[in-house]
Length: 240
Figure (tube, rainbow, N blue to C red):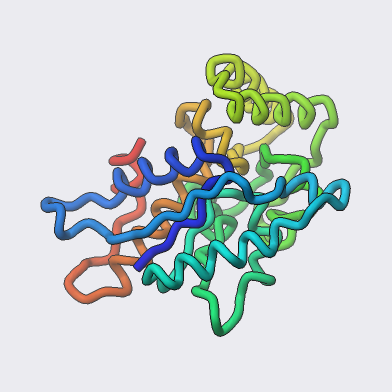
């Protein structure tokens, strides 16, 4: 069973769950994927821990992983890009494996840019500083360097989403996507799960939340008898 380690933030978790259910196209309730959710927003700030050495979220993340295992989870999705900095530290015989969000994004990039091309990654400062994408993504998709002013604007937009100011954030993210395309990005990855909550889908936009939801559905259908493997493009269209 899938476990969802959420709360980072709460709106991003709800956005992920909506996309998860929408991607899991089924004709009856009983054929939908079972999952359990732990949404605890009190996990210490991930970016602050990386950038300034603030309180580490690792103990709280491990506690959440153990709680999900006790609820029956055999694999875990974490709808927070920055939290994946601790993915390796969250592996062990007592914890379920993690479906990594960067691998899910790579699945989507392989569909739209199979030959490779430069991309932009819009993310938190912590995700950039920890090189979450740079350390794991296939080099055929080189990531454009970050312009400090643009990064600051994205950070402000993320803070607006966390504060519930969705419309103001949407304008910032729209400008950021346009700027990245102008710099030569063949695709723009929305690599903070707050961003897709404010930014609608579009051509050349890779929603990491959506990609992770699709990866979870594929895991379920490919792992259990009686379910054909999910067709990624059909699932993506159904959820868009």
